[in-house]
Length: 224
Ligand SMILES: C[S@@+](CC[C@H](N)C(=O)[O-])C[C@H]1O[C@@H](n2cnc3c(N)ncnc32)[C@H](O)[C@@H]1O
Image (cartoon, rainbow, N blue to C red; front, side):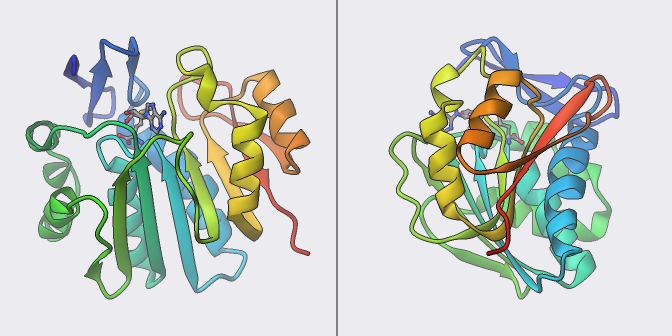
């Protein structure tokens, strides 16, 4: 699949895809970026609004790093998280071992992270009283979203690399899939993307970006 393990500046590893000519995370720090964009500005933000159970949809599951960070957040904050991740391509299990995220975080999470890595596709697994994970091999274009989510992690490659994942039609579908008060967060700050998000119904916020990036985006669906 043309994937190569790379080091990033915070000491965590990431992957470079030769097919998409893109890296999965920022060179300034894979964990730093994912924690900032998805956990702090998505999961934590929604949690602070008073939810005691949060359903997350991740578009572009990849290495599973965002699921790992969400699982750790759920355990540390006694919050029930139900996590659905979709990806068109299967990420090779042996590369998960090479990335060694289990070795990057506190040793007490090692088994939990290994269990996340071992989850099979299309089966909802309760890995902890507070964390359920289901991952599916499915293209964004074909996915039918049956449940409503509180947070969407939109972690596709950039609009330049995969324009078909950043269309108005896609963001209308994302809006429909969110519960009132729900948010979509992404590293992307592109103008056309933000206009489409707005047209799809979202309230759009430009937030400071993770290290190395000027801005990121959060779209919110108003409480009714
Ligand atoms: C930026 S990477 C995701 C990084 C991932 N969240 C992580 O932490 O490892 C983008 C992901 O989008 C996936 N992808 C590419 N085309 C897709 C499609 N049409 N539908 C769903 N996922 C797709 C890629 O396989 C890749 O895993």
